[in-house]
Amino acid sequence: MPIYEQTYRRHEARGPLRRVRFWPITREALRLILARRWFLALLVAAWLPFVVEVIRIYVVTRFPEANRILPVDGRLFGELLGWQAFFTMFITIFGGAGLVANDLRTGAILVYLSRPLTRRDYVVGKLGVPLLLNLSATLAPGLLLYAVALALAPDLFWKWDLAWIAPAVVVQSLTVSMVMSLVALAVSSLSRSVRVAGLGFFGLLIGLEVARGILYALYRRPETALLSLQADLRSLGVTLFGLADRSVNVPWAYAAAMLAAVSIGCLLVLRSRVRAVEIVQ
Amino acid sequence: MAELGVEEARSLGEMVETPLVEFKDLVVSYGPVQALAGVSGAFLPGPTGLLGPNGAGKTTLLKTLLGFLDPDRGTITAFGRDPAKEPLEVRRRIGYMPEVDCHLPGMTAAAFVAFAGELSGLPRDEAISRAHEVLYYVGLGEARYRTVETYSTGMKQRVKLAQALVHDPDLLLLDEPTNGLDPAGRDEMLALIRDISERRQMSLILCSHLLRDVEQVCENVIVFNQGRVAASGRIADLTGPRRAVYDVRVKGDATAFLTDLKDHGCEWREGEDGYRVSMSDGFGPELIFRTARESGVQVRFLRPGAETLEDVFLRALGHEAER
Image 1 (tube, each protein chain N blue to C red):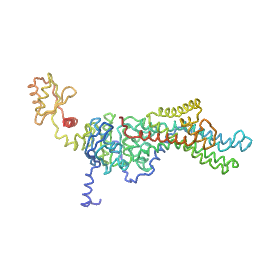
Image 2 (cartoon, rainbow over the protein chains, first blue to last red):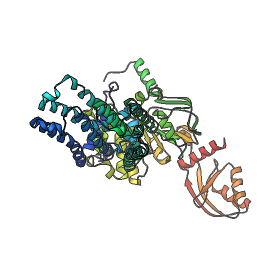
Image 3 (cartoon, rainbow over the protein chains, first blue to last red):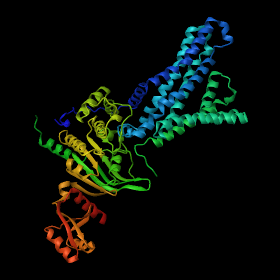
Image 4 (cartoon, rainbow over the protein chains, first blue to last red):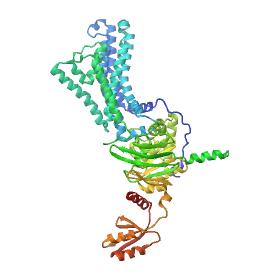
């Protein structure tokens, strides 16, 4: 019997267009990424600083004199998120570099854009992937650590004047995750190769950080921090959590403006690159 | 079955004849390059071929129909809607099988087709169920749990067809569906497409540069050439009664011989080894011998052949170029 003798049902029920159309894109990409064991290992490794900080809080509750060597206060959360920002770099490279590049290479972009989806749905769906992964490594441990701190050391943390910690963790986590994800997605859209996109993202972050370090060493000016994405993010952390880092001691508004400009730039890149038709002038 | 009233039957008849896609004076450019230069036409329900050499503007028309490109001038409507203004409403009723390879790395065929269905608006459970059915239908039932990148070219073409079919579209756009297939694979794919059209009653636009593919599946055709519509209508009407054709090889200066043949109403083009001559009505090989004698050349080879669809359309395209 020829294969086309087999049949299928007609699909008669055609409902209205869905309002939330990006979620299947995010879900399927997450499913593919989380199927890799080494990536799961990376996500687990990203929780090591959380474990270390929990131990630190526990030690201070058992031995209060340790608080003099390892002070446990609001700055602890800033330090944790500083570590987590380091991990988000790797999570973003391995989880986000191929998101658009692969679709451009394999022609899958046409599968998406020939459906009842807008380019915005596509970008939001893809953006959701590194965003959720990064939030799982920043927001989740940050808030969980706050909960653990409240439970283990209520006398240290259950105070009105420390109530800013949770909102600060949310703001810093969202900023770090969103900026990293947008930059990764924009870089990914500029190449058809996952390796090139990953190296491009890594090179961009490290290159700007190295340039900032050289300029700071030469001129000792904190404004050089504006050049580096990580320094801008650290600068926000310094303000939010009261950390001491003279090398990034720039007004938070400048750092925020720079991060906003970078994010807008990334969106413009995505707007020009995410197309079903590539027009070569 | 309830009988249709006169009015219902009339409205049904009108519906059947209403074009699914209409385009009028359509101009689409890629920067300074004009890909469609003021084309007009319509795709009626049923299978229609979109024929033309590479770069003729076929794919551009499909991409404009999907709302990927905005026309510089003119209008295009699909199901009565403007794809540039209501792209989502148009695309949800269309299944598109692109010319280029397309798959998601690491995804099995079953997951890929189900995902495509979900993107088209099917509920997840329904999309999964239909993905399996469609993959069986296109002959990939046994291989549906393999990742698409491990597939052969023929299997990849079938997956592309399955992802275009999964949401049961009203119109199927097939862009070069037999690309890269061996003769057996090509025949199977065309049989599948014919089945979709005849038994499933699904309208489709088959975009191809291969006349044989279009001839096997479609009754109607629109021929594109250099961004213009060179011919359109029923294939049988366009080709008309086919002429007698001869493959001819001559010794000597063929210029005068060929000019004289043209003066007698014959048409010729260079073949693989000699000339392919389409005779004017009522004439046979004796005209070739007589003309050769008068032109002072020797006929060294003469073989009768049937005029193919390719000859007919080359003739049509030639006339278009002359105009």
